[in-house]
Length: 184
Image (cartoon, rainbow, N blue to C red; front, side):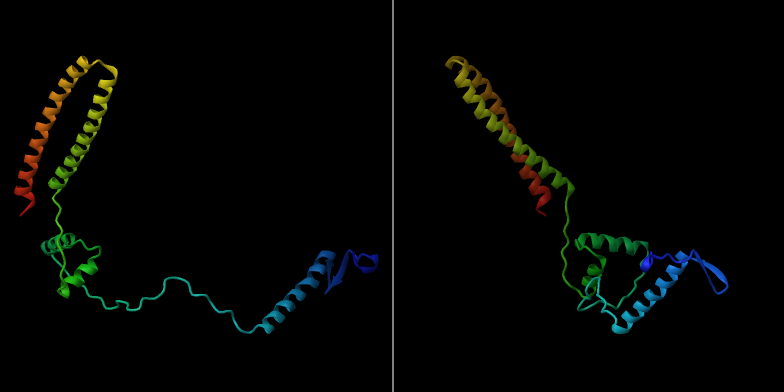
């Protein structure tokens, strides 16, 4: 409703065409919006400073690049040398080779690694047997008479002797393995 309680006419003739109330209201609002926007632009002629996003620049960027071509044999040799070096990137490896920097070759013997892993597992099982042995002896003394406990301990002692013989064989095999394969 307009001021004074009167409604505008349902349609008005503008430029030879009939225009409804809604269009009249819209036409009155649009110029006001455009005028406000122009006033805002005139007040702040300086653009806002942009924020710099992304990664910060390197202090010493590597910008010089070279290419090298290998045949199949040279490429295979290059890859084996790269894998032996233990470096993470080929660029570091090539730069080290070009500038004659010293690099280490680390070789892992999978058989030796497997042997050591199994030996560690076996050692853990021996410790578990020792703990179980102590628990069994305590329980035998608590629940059985002295005569029965000694008979059962005799059987347990024979099994323990077998384990001791087995552990001696393991130590001998480990010593021969180390002397033959690991210390070159």
